[in-house]
Amino acid sequence: MSSTHREIPGTIFFDGPMSTKGYPLNKMCYSFNNADAREAFKADEAGYCDKFGLTEAQKEAILKRDLNELLRLGGSVYYLAKFAGLLGLNMQDIGGMQTGRTKEEFQAYLDSQGRGKNNG
Image (cartoon, rainbow, N blue to C red; front, side, top):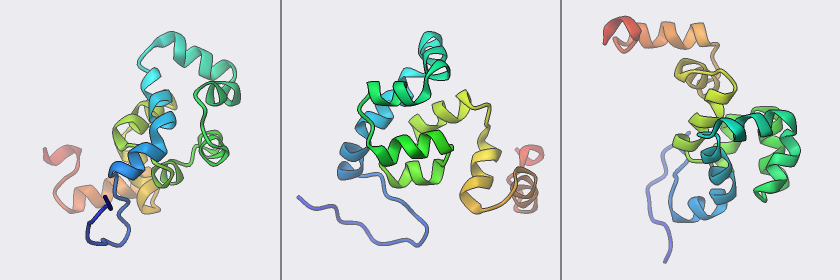
């Protein structure tokens, strides 16, 4: 069975093959629900990645904090949000990274579109 979807520039589809590709990465990010896991990751990030069997590319993207690359490598935005939270990032930080803006520029963009924190 092949994945069928229309191409949307700038969109990374999370479908069955991407889910399979990202399974170890997403499993690791899910583990961050546990405080002991978060501490273990902070103590030895590379070793923690190895424990879950991440690919070298996934491990490198984790260590570089490259959320966009992690999406391309099969990361689910839901599970990557757990990793971002571990790093102290919020949705405006992530939106800025994904659009090539600073957090402040991204927040200003949201505000200009009527979707910012002050606009409900």
